Length: 109
Image (cartoon, rainbow, N blue to C red; front, side, top):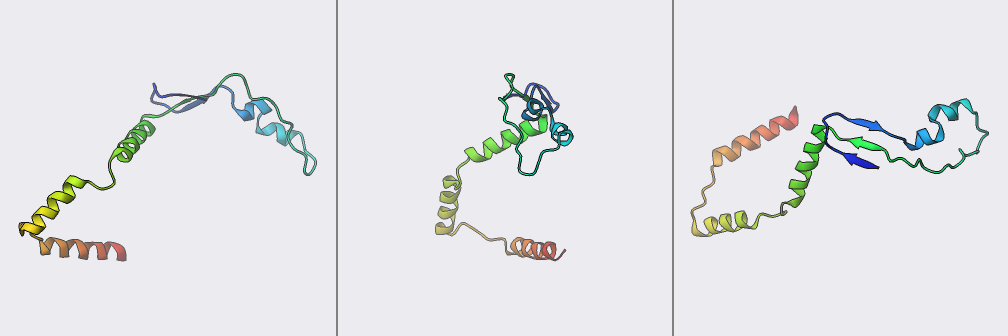
C-alpha cells in the first residue's frame, strides 16, 4: 500500500483484496456451503493508493508533536520548586476555588 498525502481529498484507488476476490457481492452470488471457505487468491500486483485528507495530516502532525514532548517538563518543575522553597510562589485561592466549583458543576450537568 502506498500513502500519498499530496491532495486534500480522501480516496481509495487501485486494487484491494475484495476486488481481487471479485468483491463482496461475489460471495453473496455464489452461495457457499456451511464451513466452506472462499478460495485463496494471490494479492493484486498493483498497490492500493491512499490519499489522506488535510484534517488527517493535521492530526498526524499534532500526534507527532505531542509524542515528541517529554512527559515531565523538568525546567517548569525546577522553576516552581525554586519559587516554593524561596517563598515567592503565591496561590490564588479564589481562582482555585472558582475552578473547583466550576468542575463540580460541570460534573453535575
